[in-house]
Amino acid sequence: MLNIYNIETSNYVNGNGCRYVLWLQGCDLGCVGCWNQQSWSFADRILKSVDEVFTQIKSLEHKLDGVTFSGGEPFLQSSELSQLAKLIKEKTLLDLQVFTGFNKDELIKKEQIELLNYTDILVAGRFDDTKKNNNQIVYILNDSIDTWQFNNSDVEIELDEDSNIKITGYPTNKLINEIKGDSDARV
Amino acid sequence: MSRVINIKGKVIIQNMQLAKEAINECRFDIDIINNQFVFNKYDYYDGENKASEINQVESLYTQKFNIYLEQAAEEERLKIEEEKRVMREEKADLLIANAKKQGYKLKKEIREDKTIKLVLQKRIY
Image (tube, rainbow over all chains, first blue to last red; front, side, top):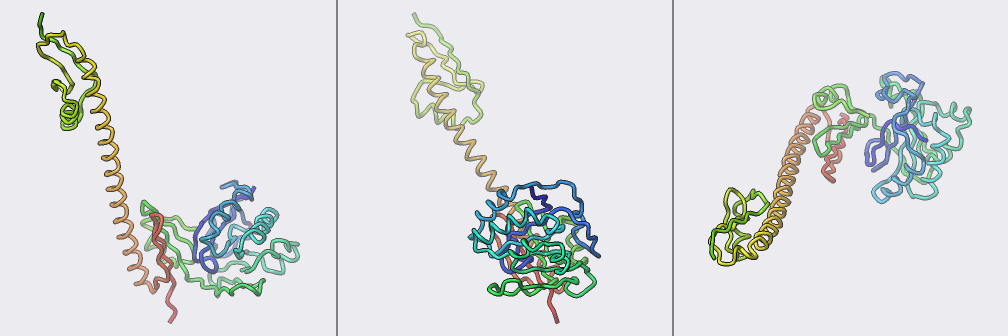
């Protein structure tokens, strides 16, 4: 089973176009200024099978440009994510982008080649919000897809039916504080 | 022999207008007393068939009242939905205005499935 922190079925700030974003639960890298510290714990949060997630992605394919894995740390669940990535690449036309706190070399040393092989764009390196591009390097691993311009100022705010607010992306603390009266739901 | 016959229905009337409509449409000699359908008159036939007529009126009234309840519920649902939509729109406008003050531009705005999605990007000078 995949241990998931959050799923957004339509998100515009985690890769090119409209994306299905899967934030995995569990990370022990302890990056500086990590925004998703709630996703560090390895305790079960949302458990879904690979098939369950893929079925949802497939049903939404007509509305999507791609799928993004983020975290938490995706490569700590690489065995099951590789199965999901394989399904995405073989049975859809969607591209796959992965955010990881590991460096690319670390991933190669850790023999994480299978998931890397299915990845079109890799954003890798220890997150540090005090550094340019959050200290992360963007690797285009598939030449046939559009490049992605890392922009760590993009913010997506979603108001649901009852005006509850969910924020994704890279908001400044000032913007967060402005909205905080309404919600602390940030992923 | 004639006498006063009193036959009362079982339904408690909650909407007088619909009850009167039901009586008029059935064309039975039935009154409304204390929010119930009642036959309360001299009757040469000891109220023969009156219980059945009251049942028919009650059935028609119940049918009308259920439709009325459904319509009222639908109107209430639409009213609440509209109130939520207005609140959502106002909140989104406020968020956009505040974000613009902080140097963000609105890159994309998607309104669908009763949600509003705002994609903002910090202006780079």
